[in-house]
Image (cartoon, rainbow, N blue to C red; front, top):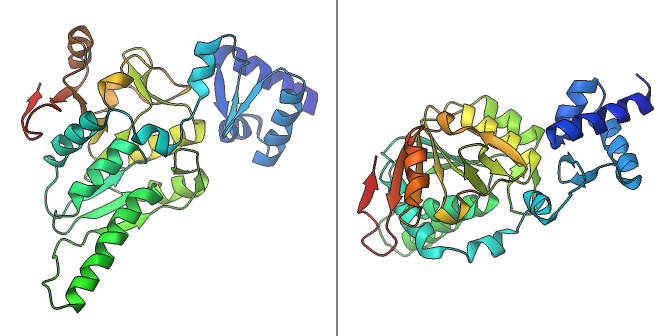
Length: 285
């Protein structure tokens, strides 16, 4: 296939699909990732597509379309909905049991959950988030210092596996290296963050490579739980990584509108954490 034919095919695909990743295009057209990246550069310069991290989208027609590809950094997201995230994390921690193997995707709510894992004995934690891995690294360092000073050592000490990969603006490690590491694993429970969710689009993220890595992490787990505060309800980002029935449980908060909660309950289990009360008191259905 000539380059011009391949590029025309890319434009046509984006017109119908809206967005696609570099790896998906490389597989479809049977060429290297580097060739696809050159194609995307050429098409972007011509104004026929818009490049995003890990792929391309059709040119945004309005502000709403632009927001679907916007990827806020970790600091920006971590300052939002703090009480809700803490309540959701506490509710998620109730699903943990000693000896489990647990996967945590990158995200500010999964980061909040990671602090609860420090006291659960004999966990194995797999994550594509350097920030989450750092929580355990700092805790291990503090325990070592305390042990040196004669204090008793914490017996929890989770075993932490950090995938490799390319870092995104939201501090996730994604791409072929991360995906290859995850494909060989079999986890008891996977916790995933999300940029947005809806009945129509499922759980979504603005980064196409992160969507692919999230899908791989999801497939490695026997059960999957998504952690998402109510502000993400109705938000649709560029790439879907899971449809609602693929998720065992969604943990949100009591700010979730009643009609949305009723619609969600038709397709998955729903736990609503109340940020205004004891975080161990939740509503499940």
